[in-house]
Length: 112
Length: 112
Figure 1 (cartoon, rainbow over the protein chains, first blue to last red):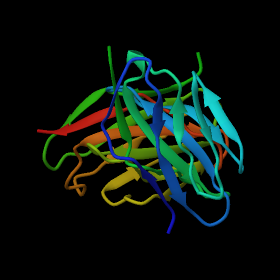
Figure 2: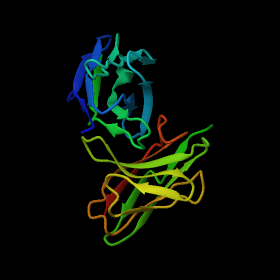
Figure 3: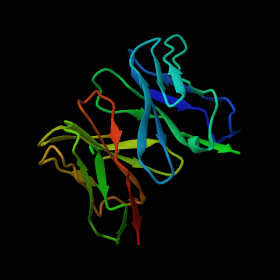
Figure 4: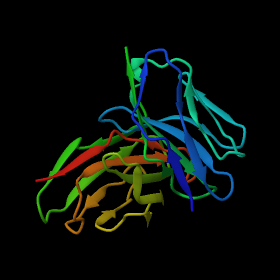
């Protein structure tokens, strides 16, 4: 079936550490892929997206590359800040399908 | 400023009561969506609407109803048939059905 799998959290890092949050997907075809971020008590914000293989989405120092061969869209950031503490959701959409399929989210905690 | 607003921020429901959650957008988006988020889980789609006066069931529509009388508005009613309504409800919109979705701040529904 069509699904999105994220690494379980929480992920705890010290400020300025390197971040990787893994995301893999299963789908027929070539889905558009998204990362969303949710700060405590708020809705989701679109962080970045990629619509075809080898595309790299980037925003606010975060990057993710659409890897068709490994069906992955891992989120990375070179140097995290305390303000990056949030829950990160990977999601996919396929063709003209109407809905996003979300992963279960990964909580990131960044400490001083 | 353009965006999506949801109200109220917190809502309390008594047993056997129907309650309605408001969602308004001024982004001129055609498509709108309602999701439910439970603790530690991803988002699940309740209903979506591609255009005014049209809407479709998502994955967990039972116990919910919607209307789309105006492009800007997509209210969700949680009926007494929904036996486990306590959750965080998120509204989203997109320019077209396959586009990136933008989320409101959410409404937290609690049962008294």
